[in-house]
Length: 146
Image (cartoon, rainbow, N blue to C red):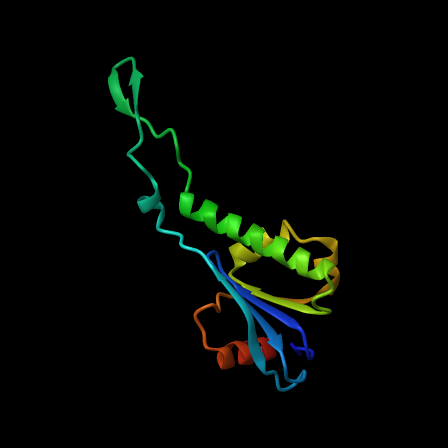
């Protein structure tokens, strides 16, 4: 995939968003950091306050899980929604003409639910991979190869 000059490239996962600008051309990209957003998101077990409550059954007390909510995943989904909202704000401010988004499949799917029509109209590519921990030169190569 070619990355046009001045394109916005977003590399995200459920807790980190990296915004890059391509200062190079379509064949030889030079991604530079535009901004970074990161949030703490402990494991689900560290976010739950207690074990499931007890429920009474006809045979006595039994364990019953009232909450099967995965708080960690819920927070990752909220963060993906927030990423889409930031892209909407930037698109409406004409901050970019073309956009490439790289994110793990689940995060990408959650972001898609919240794309604004202006974001969709500027979106030139999506890559369903987790690249937030990769060096910039590796990100450039993976995008070009896609």
